Length: 136
Image (cartoon, rainbow, N blue to C red; front, side, top):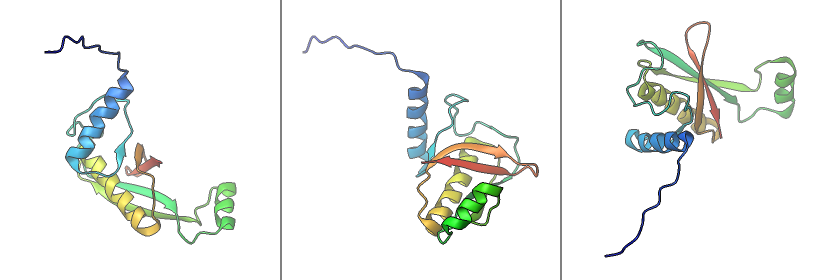
């Protein structure tokens, strides 16, 4: 037997959330990473939005977009250089929203090799749909 004292260090809330959602990512088989921790360690069935189907959209830069198009879009708020993909969240739960975000990411990855795997937000649009916000 070893006579060894176990030392526990303080773990911050963000670290606990990261670990929680890492475990959930594996359980759900997602390649994207849930990066919204404001709600703490929500379970997969936690409802963030009301229980109804919602369209989730994701905008990304086209593979063949020119620098001129991108700069023009930045200057005037246009979307000449952009492509939009979409999916549906069957309800407002973490699991349904994550699945819709995963679908959007996979569509963008297939189109342009997108690497933005971090799900950072779902912005409510005027029409009730949700715009996916990602980070890399």
